[in-house]
Image 1 (cartoon, rainbow, N blue to C red):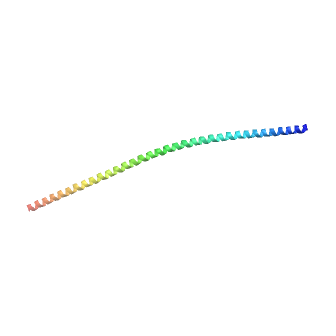
Image 2: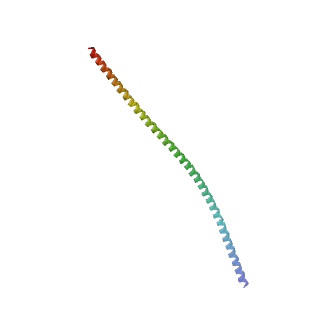
Image 3: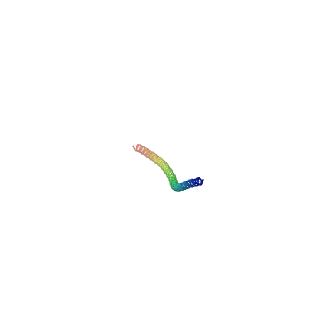
Length: 123
């Protein structure tokens, strides 16, 4: 009977050792998985930081481009105003030239008419 009890104790001890080895292996695997996941989390965190920095950089660049676009639009509008003003001035000058030519023509006509009258008077 002691033989059976000893055998049961021996089997129980063997099972206990086997279970302890399995628990130890699972703990080691769990620790390795935890370390691997922490490393992945750290890597992802660094990737997120890098992406956020890049996003901020791109947003600043976009803001800069928006400001440049506003300045270009303002410059274009100013240029269009200058062109419009120049066209108005050109029209005024053309009108003045036309008026001066008309006055000159009229004066010449009056001079010639007077000259013709005088010439006819002399004849």
